Amino acid sequence: MPESLTSTNGIIYPLIDYRPMFGKVDKNTVLNNVHKALRASDLQFEVKEGGMVILSAMGDDLPIGMMIIADDDNRTLNIYCYLMFDIPEDARAKLIPELNTINNSINNGGFYMDDSEPKIYFKIVQSYFDRAPSVATIQHLVMIAFKTVDVNDGKLKGLIPASAIKRDYMYS
Image (tube, rainbow, N blue to C red; front, side, top):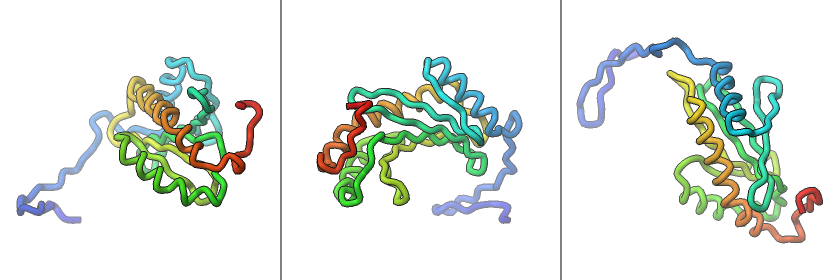
């Protein structure tokens, strides 16, 4: 490993042996703050194997699911919202340009489609390399995720032909 890095303008920067000030942050510390944030926000949730947190909320027009995962390998807290309707195979190509347009208009997080599932997801990420995200930060990120999905889900669902949407009578 080199002892220094040279920037593009020729300045040499010594590499620092970085160690977090207060020790290594781990998944359990982060998930503990997630639980506190969700309780403080009066959100009901359940914890699955591996610590994954699952919850849902009702948007203005459609329900929104959420998964929160602490990824110790990458030291990130990953918040995924998923739209509670399936995307038919023939509608996927039509949605890609719209997802790109929406992603260019938001500053935090992004929408994407997973090839293995017929769903649209929204993902927002917070690093926890040197310290755990605070309860307030987690509350803020959860609300950003829910609001961003709520603002855009109707527009995305509107791009799918009505005949292709599987009706969920619980939310109709």
